[in-house]
Length: 609
Image 1 (spheres, rainbow, N blue to C red):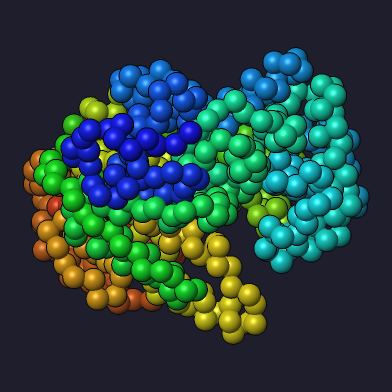
Image 2 (tube, helix red, strand yellow):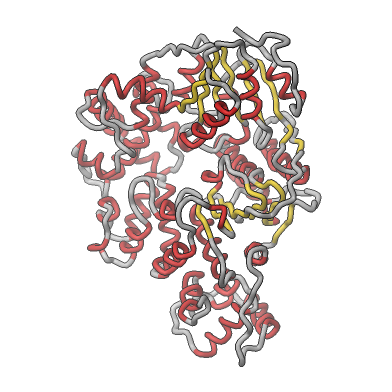
């Protein structure tokens, strides 16, 4: 059953692209740019199907599912069932088999205990093995393959040290994965969400629907795509090929795998043409890696509000650093909100916390709670582990600890004190988010942190790989470009972007503001709270320290004073710079100290009172 001509009498407010999709027949795929009204289009597509049609809408996650359910109900579409891949699989697998489901994946130390792994003579080998077993398990459960041995785990390992370790212990790692799967299948241990989704796929289910609408197809894994493609229903898959940012979770660009007739939604109702032009220019960087069809984005947004403001970063580390600078430069009245809860930025998926890593650095072993971190003798051993496992989250934690040391306690407490309670972020002066957590969000004004891929870095990395005779990691660099594209397209009205992230030759526009590194955070602060404390008596003001700062920057970089006591003269100079608006990064550079040390000293001097 497909669209019946004449069933809709009006397409008021819809574009020609949307109307073409609604009137289509057969299996189709829709490539929709950010903010192009794809949900509206899908709802109208469903409304145009014959009465009594059984329709399944597959949402990306639980929050999208709840939002979509409300929209379909508001349109009066009681015949549309809204599910996520996991909620669908849960009903088919967990209930009938009586499984117990874990809230999260197995921790590294739990796998060590379950499989009774030993070091095999290598330092911390049992934990490194467990880490790779966990990753291989996730790789398999998200694949379309029926057996573990049908996959080559080495395909997703890139670091030389990690490849060396995996090559040496491959059989042990593969057998460990098979043992975990067998125990979960028998119900001997609790199953994971990945496991029951995989078991659902292997059961070859046939779903009782006439139409299946698969949203966010660019971030689907092979396991669910396989289920989707095998259905007899009319199939619609929608997404944006340039918003694929979950490759590290083994997502694939399912839109490109679905050999259906292609439709496009190229007009964005979210942002104006300036931002659309910038987004297209960033995507053009992909031409440096491979052939690319022209990317057309038309900005039709007209909102001129500056109510909601967000700072978006590529990494947790970049975001925390920017949040610290923000609260430093905003002395009073600031209210902040972290997407995904601020505590989530201090914990790795495997359970280790930022404080565990800090206690390791300080040799306070009795205060370390995580078994993995507790097994490390010192930071050198942790960094060796990180190198052999490619553990990105632990790597970022180690960098934060090395940068801030004991100031971390006060910094995180200050951020939590300013954080809005609950989930009502509407009262925040600034929302902080990584790009992954900002996916699907939109804000009136967006400030980007300078930790994304740049055009210059992309070119250098390409040249380096080619010089070494190595194959280009095209998928990896494509995803890095996608991350910047997703961040840029969260802005509805105005975007503040570091100049390093701007494509070469990009024309200026009123909705895209280019920032230098030194002015980026000050600009963000000024849009929320421009009040400054008066300069205390005895402080000479901004001009007095500028020449000294310029002179300091001409000297070779030195950290020799980083651990020397603060003197009265240094305190006076520090607070003068702070009162006259110097960013914390500039002050840290000037005094040869870490940003954390500067932040801590300012707090002790009553700068935030």
